[in-house]
Image 1 (spheres, one colour):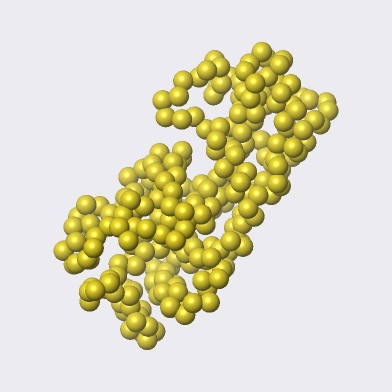
Image 2 (cartoon, rainbow, N blue to C red; image 1 turned 60 degrees about the horizontal axis):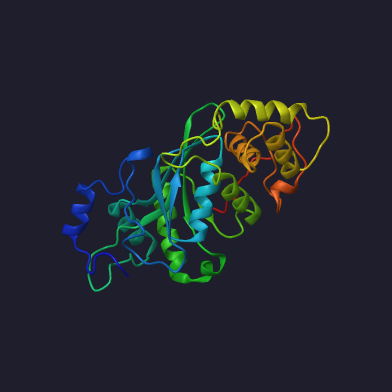
Length: 280
């Protein structure tokens, strides 16, 4: 395991003073990041185009949770590795008769972290918060894992925040794959428009062509036709279509294996929004 070889109260205080686990949006700094700790899963740094910062995920499942939540139209914020007040978790451990985790080779109580605190808005535009822990289904048979989750649930109950579990059964892998596919079209930092109007005028033109098309070719075929009709580089139309999906100007059911092989959507069609199966 990388990072501090021995945790101390002084080290914890220094992290708090450095702003770890604090802030919101672009300024949020996770308590732990992928440079510091190893993981059994796949560690990644995921650029957030809505928060304008890098998200630190310690497994494929954590990355999937972020991708799906960020894609929601009511998404506001995502705080990964959110630290929990030790006073609350120690109190919950004593009340529940659970041994509170300690750092290895010390008697220092662990600063427990929630995998993600997600902020969204409800139908009235009011901010809502939800805490998420991410675990493979098989690990939910481990008594120690369940004990730690009990402390997290107790913390959330004390804070008045709903607590949910995210597992491999929480969302279709097709949805995650398609969101990944859509995100590939997003502008990179400093990217210049190779095709004039790619990120502006072409979006309107493509949408107009799409909704006035009298036939229903596949998305891939329609995008190829767009490239030829407007004399743009091959692949431009497909990238524009992805950008329209990202902006929710076009709706598609993402729970399909190959989105690009589906027939083009019609104006006014409303597809189901990718959602998470919530396990409390």
